Length: 104
Image (cartoon, rainbow, N blue to C red; front, top):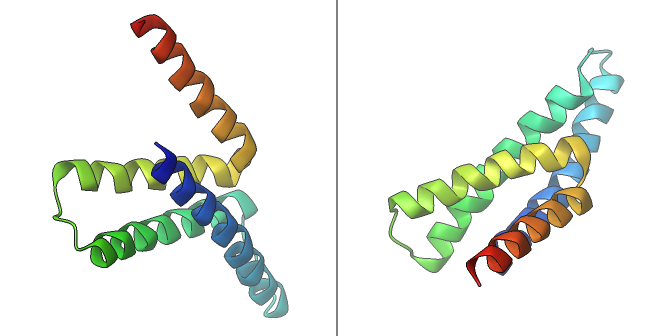
């Protein structure tokens, strides 16, 4: 869980930076864009690249669990791009605490 949240934080920071860079380029060239769609697409691309980079760096086997983790990272990063990392982290922590409380 900690590794996933760290990856989500990294993707969120990179998404913010990359989205601002793309927005600046679009503004410079007079291109129109939808900010939420742009940030969502950038977040998914970055999360997939981070996931692939993690698999290559750790020399992990590509399993269903790995692919599921990358898909979850892409979806959560899309949500982070829309509402912010802090809100998503709080929701994940509350969900985890709820599951821990009901299991005990």
